[in-house]
Image 1 (cartoon, rainbow, N blue to C red):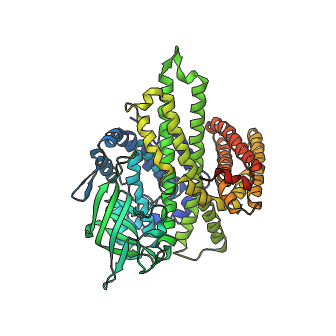
Image 2: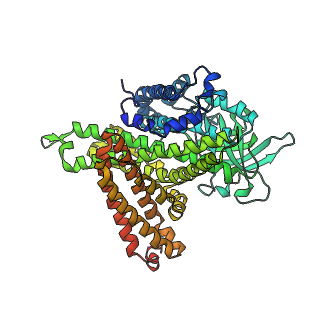
Image 3: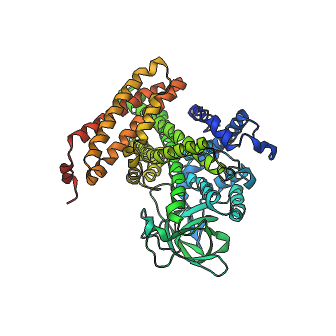
Length: 567
């Protein structure tokens, strides 16, 4: 019987990263919860054993039920009846099983019914769920919207809503509208305050994932006469109160089990979450960072599935008297797929650890004053998380799409047929580089960390790590690539030409990502021999990509950008 956690030793490698000991101690407040909850860990080993056991449950459910239901769900999909969503039969079975297994509200504190997991093992569960069924991860993974309620809502709202999420109620984030996609400043859904302190919402939302959820986080315009982000607030809508109907479910290319809805709000009762005017400026930004990390995990899960499907087929399929995996054209593709998978996964968990440290310090700061050292550390990890979140979402989703493409290519004509899972994977993968901010928007978010030196400082910190002698030649190559990256950044920034900088931004961000992922894989291989092959293959990929971008930037002057402008 398949278990998608125990069959993948790479996951345990990342779960046992040295920084996890610090993360767990902070999350558990030096294990003081053990005095209040009999299931809270007594020490680090006890906590890791708990994560391991829960992830094993996730792996078993995913490797059997969710994976086995995926094809049926893709064909059946959800439907609308009387303004409500009816999930595909397999989706409902998946949800019921996850609820019974207690796999909802994983990162929420125990006092509110959660498991108090750090972000890292929760993201690992998302990685596993995505491998089983990409679309179902959207439903299950939206439990992380509860983080916004936990961070910004008042205590009464936390007590009201978070235990419901932990018990298995679903969530959605209702942000986009027909005339406001990525430009959320244009949101016009109207929020009107009532004499009793509640609010009423009126308008339309579109492209809302799991839009008929039990609990909604809604971005709406609370300030009369405003047209920008400063007039937007965040609200909590409870489906039990009524007032919202599903007009339609979008007919999508992929992730067909996940209902993407158009919603009509008609005088729907809602509660203000946090403070007025901070809906977009503060709360959506926090919400989107978490969502982007979730999509990065989804991308890695799809990459994992695509690689495994391609590898299995290449071993079985025989042409010209031998398995096609023996042909260089095929085994090279597989090696590159595995290297891209491992590169995106190592950056995913590095980013998750960065998020963990600063988020936990933020939470501790609500209980006591942080020491100067703690505050400095929180600030440092917050900057690293802010830098790496768009990097992994952007590059991880692109690698996911490339691996899904190559998976079909290895299957040949069979991959174009619905008889094989790779056809569904290819359709599911496509959205990962679009929603929660396109790859192009991730570049916009990442470029300031190129120009301010965040990525360069991270490279330098990896360069200074202690490594075995066998990896020192790898480090020398990466030092050389880093110098080329520095020169490219200097060339672009010295021009003081905004259009030229925007034009070259993608290349600079990709160079940074290539070098950082190559460093991380080198450090993985230094700790675990099983990563040596991917570290070597990815180094070759990084070297080719960095040199290509460096040469392009060195040769193209600002005046030549005009050649690329649309007619």
